[in-house]
Length: 148
Image: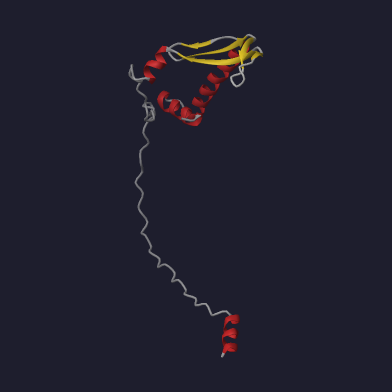
């Protein structure tokens, strides 16, 4: 599922327009990214935990030579799936039901249809296609005449 598909699914499920759903999805992503960039942990209970982790410098080993090397300190992004997400993804718990049909506003009054007289249909004959025969190229005619 791509972002566009997610926005459309959210719009169908919540009854929002596609523009409103796009704003909601974009806003959610922006808030998560801004808070994680500040160093805060964002925990969406039952779904995932987003965090920025600082790893200290450490000793490592080169697997090809066995030589001890120094690994620099670095900052990494970490996303952890939480129990609720894992249970649904692995089939332990049932997935939530999604509304896949558009929600129609019940408060909108129905418009009355005015009967219009149908205009008599006029049938037009399709124009005949012209068949054009192509003449043989002049060069081949001249060459054939020379050979005789």
